[in-house]
Length: 325
Ligand code: UDP
Ligand code: MG
Image (cartoon, rainbow, N blue to C red):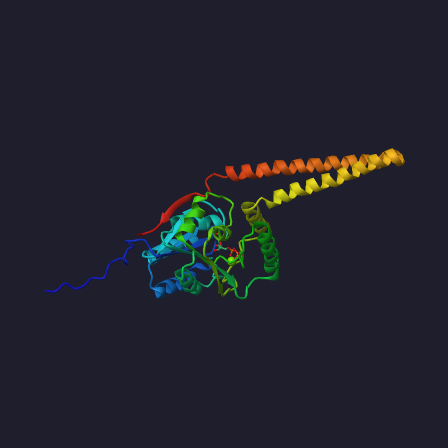
């Protein structure tokens, strides 16, 4: 009597670390998750490489978490879900995914289907070619001009101030080598911009062109305030130029005012006092104002440095990790 091969009750568990981890932050995306799951698993299965998908539920208020948990049940072989205790923002959600990911290549992706999952193999191929960070730029960005114009301007300022070159800072469809991801996680930074940090540490960066779709459902989680905050993180998190500029402006004002003071003194000695001496007073006032601004700038510089050191607080709290392998 020969033994009939029995199908395993659950799909094969991951015994060894996966080769590729796909990290996806999720905040109120229940309308997008089912389609994302379908398209993503199709891509992963077609790639035929050992892959895991790590979703982070960033304190969603809709039933995103329930959906994600059902995905773990459906595909326990590839899906893991990190559950936050509350909302910590997109970059912290990605950070937690990074910390949990076990793959050598780590791909990030948005949950709203603006980044087509079908582009993942293209990024992986570029990583296989030996790059340690593969960024992407959107072929024809599907966002309103109110979203594209500010990001164009900000891209320019950011490049000038931080010296970090990225064609499209807003596109989160990116791939990173494990060592780069570890540097980012171990940095312990709270307010950071992950693509910029990766670009900073990359030795062999590359960029590929990807498709970009309009949001499948729902509206962007970013409003103008959040966007400005994010870009402040980007500027002050990567450079002290804003503070230094402030100091330099103060110094320039002091210098110019000093010249005015000297001129007024000489004028008073040679020609005599001007009407009521009011402009001498102004000159002295401007000079002192310049000194005050310089002082503020210097203090600010120290505060900035101390701030950079002190930010060692817990960045996020993971409630549980739902996984079956
Ligand atoms: N996201 C998140 N936490 C947040 C805001 C957003 O995890 O507090 C996720 C969101 O679910 C999506 C990605 O980050 O997967 C990008 O967010 P969104 O589409 O709102 O931003 P946009 O595409 O407008 O930049
Ligand atoms: Mg989006």
